[in-house]
Amino acid sequence: MTTTLLIQTQTTPLTVSLPATAPMTRDEFYAFCQANRDLRIERTATGEVVIMSPAFADTGNRNFNLSAHLWVWSKRDGTGLGFDSSAGFTLPNGATRSPDAAWIRADGWNALSEEEKASFAPIAPDFVIELRSASDTLSGLKAKMQEYIENGVRLGWLIDRQNRAVYIYRPDREPEVWENPDGVSGDPQLPGFSLPMAKIW
Image (tube, helix red, strand yellow):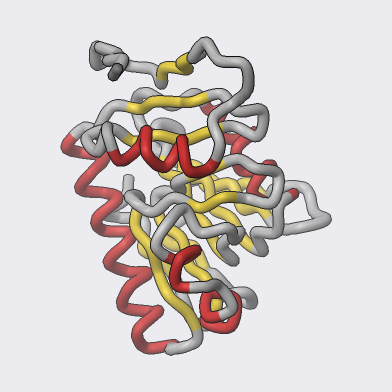
């Protein structure tokens, strides 16, 4: 028997509690996501399922622009792989997250099995970008960025378009806040990578 959840598009992500004796296993969560391919789905470390509607067109365009810049640099650099917002990763704390863009060093990626790569890969990316959309709260995204860093991400950018600010996250440091920058540099973690902000704002 299949249970169908009808979720109306809204301006904030929806957290769904599914009655069960235990949170979904990794395989059950994977099957749930496969059955709902049109939705962006994440899972918290405590097993809550977070469902997000597809991005609005303007946010999708800006996601495309930042992913394109990351792809060009990644191809030139050659030491890792880039990922867009459709990729999900299982962090060490058990959460499954889908950053708007991510990059992983090749040695870390190649250490995974083919089965792990074909699922929500059990790895924290080395670099992540979250682009704030109309449906995101700044406090919620800051908490997500902190979770990334606590789980092994080496560099994270939170881009707050509404306030034209970029929050830079690194391990063992307080976040830096750049107000209305023309560009943001990934040095030294991503040598030579820079993101011009004109088409992101």
